Amino acid sequence: MATTTIRVDTDAHASLVEMSKATGASLIDTVSDAAEALRRQHFAQQVAGELADLHADSEAWADYVADADETSVADGVA
Image (tube, rainbow, N blue to C red; front, side, top):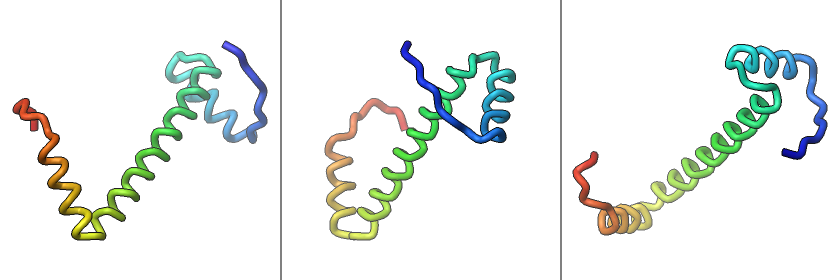
């Protein structure tokens, strides 16, 4: 795996080192995990915003729900 150097403030570094020690993961893995968690959080916020926009348009929301009902899998899992 290729690496690079980034600058972080001392508080952020201390938090990352603390998390690394608590989990037993390397500092590199801890930083990678933090970046992935932030990426997922931003994605979830984007999806939530798009769904809120869709829900605000009653006709578009009804179409979305109808499409979802048509494409759902009847596997018995709720």
